Length: 201
Image (tube, rainbow, N blue to C red):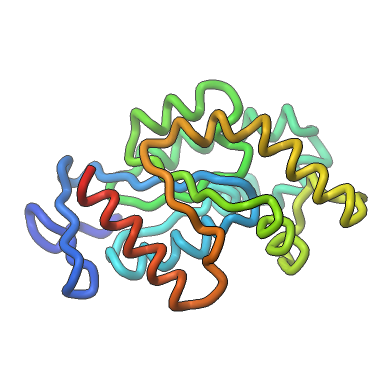
């Protein structure tokens, strides 16, 4: 059962940031951006502040399919994974009063970006290629698209993919620069900026 707003008009964020709900019970905050941009980190922090459930789309897919994203890629290829991803996106984006983190490629396939723009408040977490590369190099998550690539190849791959994907990311209703989000205090600042953007929408 999903959590309900604290009253009929407002969710309160740490007693400091009231976030008006224009569509009570139907608010969906949907985070997009390249892998390594901090979507899950921001989503969890935003969830804690707003008291709203958080869903990571990749985790949701793994839970529903009982397989890892890598296993799905290995068995069905990227095309097969993207079809599953689209179907699961249409499931989770029907939930009400939630925060959703999409995979890096999610907005770039089918009509996904148009669909999520219809479903909620989309937020592009924008980050420089250099920082993305740093985060991915430090991270422990298995990224199927980066397997068997050298660090130089990964860096080049990020630059090339951003050129293709950014036109989709830029269709989001809001953009937050997260290039400098490298510690807890800066994560809090990012969340505050995001809340302000949503409040002023």
